[in-house]
Length: 202
Image 1: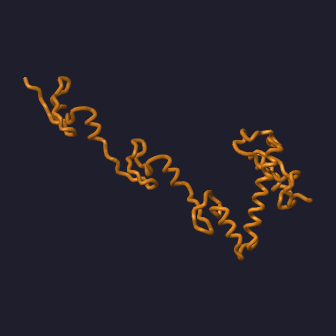
Image 2: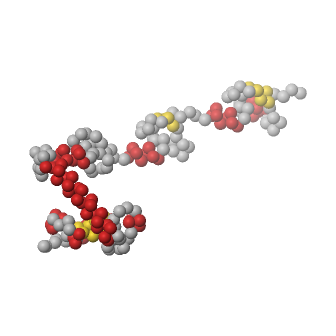
Image 3: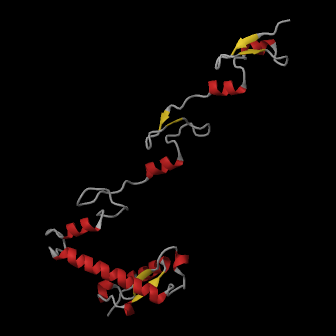
């Protein structure tokens, strides 16, 4: 007795009817020579295009209405775009910033229409003030070593300690070491909140 045979619809290979397959199943359902050929033939190709990265993808069984190819692209689509620099038009590095670099910030402050016009002295004064503050802040961190409120170290703070004005600079105009202390970021926020909630009289 000769065995019944068919040609696989996916790979073209000839395969034979097994003794465990009924004649009805063989005639109506048997189309592929293996489970692998069945999976490859029945698997639908990707038809969706991710609007963020442009990658071709297909939806998972549990997410048939998916719009993006991954969670990273989904998060990126909800992320607010960075604003452009007010001087050169390039994207800034963080949200709520107006300029992409110190050079653009200096150029903007040299304009005559700004509220604090400094003219040609802007670049010189800005660089001097910035250099002075970086040096003074480093001195305070070396002096205090830990947060002066909770004794947290820079390692526990996960970054360098903040330098805080005991009496706000807008009131005291004082950058002397006696008016400065090192605080962790949490204590710094608490101190600023406390100062903003209470009026100071000098």
